[in-house]
Length: 351
Image 1 (tube, rainbow, N blue to C red):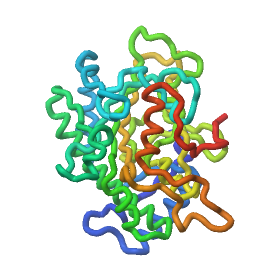
Image 2: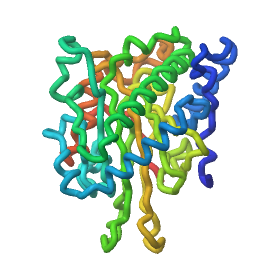
Image 3: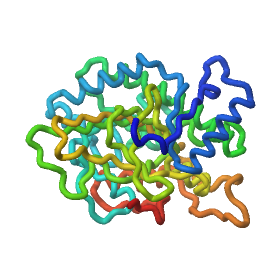
Image 4: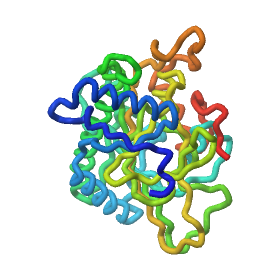
């Protein structure tokens, strides 16, 4: 786990225990630790999360089977428009640096598959309003046949974990535990599996080309399952890049733009990227990850929390709906154009 020291390991079992969790003082201690980590680096490795190891293994196995399917099958699952964050993204079709407002960027060296909420109550105006994009139907492959059931089970498990983390975050911010439930409880969450694979005979990356360009995540928080291999780097408080490899059994959790804006930058939406393996390293250099993006309700207004502003620390961001923020962030990388989204990274570029 060389290079992972910048991202602390936090046991969150006091908040995830299915029998009701820890005592109040235990929960407050965990919340306090999360506050420290979110202020300092914006990334944590969480253990005691309660997601079954068997489900995680099934998720990785079936996802690997999907990515090994013929490319023609995968290409048939491309989304109908850039606003629909579903289905297959071919190798080299996106460039995440555009989400930060880049004017030009080389394509990223990954392929991906996305899903969102698989079913929602019919006839509810809240969901129907975004049925064309944020709650669009998932695009499921015919093979592997069990992919849908495994992915939905994992998605639901991570949705529950995200809700419990948001309660811990609320406690850390001196808010009622259920504060974020009404702002994120019906969120258009997205789950994305990424595969980074050096194909036989493929050219070396161009100078500056990355497996995934530097970016911040768009939502409230991200829960990442990743291989214990090199590649993921985060921008530390020292403005230098640091490698991160997950501890055994841990998820990597990071703060996204929505919580940075809600907390008025008390918490960091940290820049991160995935760098390619050394050219001299032989073999395919496979890296896999599954990111669960916990968003806000699409109609929720993101404005600085009352516990994070004062006369000496006025709001740094304008109020904006979650939908407007997410679409501005999403469309840049998808259309390979400069994003118009509000930045949470002013002055942070990496050295």
